[in-house]
Image (tube, rainbow, N blue to C red; front, side, top):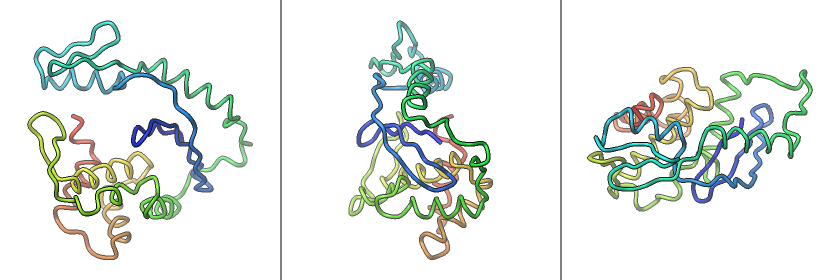
Length: 192
């Protein structure tokens, strides 16, 4: 699996689902927003004046350079060729079971892992943050949202499974607020 991570710096993260081995590679893509996300913003009609023109998204009186799907495809293919990521023998390719996914997610949710959205906000969990125009939350809410989104993207089958995995991580039953934010992320509801 290849992900583009934007924070704290833009890199490609390659995760071998079978072995849970992670590698980071430089990502030289230039721009501030992906083509797909720019189209979603236009379609959602948050700003009646929003438009895409000359490779830029004009939204809320700001201009954002778009990273095209073609550029992303080229960069990923180049990474695969350069790092020989596609040279896995067919017998080595496997689809992880839900138990393997759970193990990987629990491991990555720990401090310093790729799904650790919580360490960096310690002590600031309840600080307010604007998610999009008119929508505010706490930093903890955003972290839970990101975790729910990541659980879906990695391949967790159901929302209930994601609750169970995060509950196992916390060592307790989840409260209603945690469930709501994980659900929002799992269903990508803030991106609609």
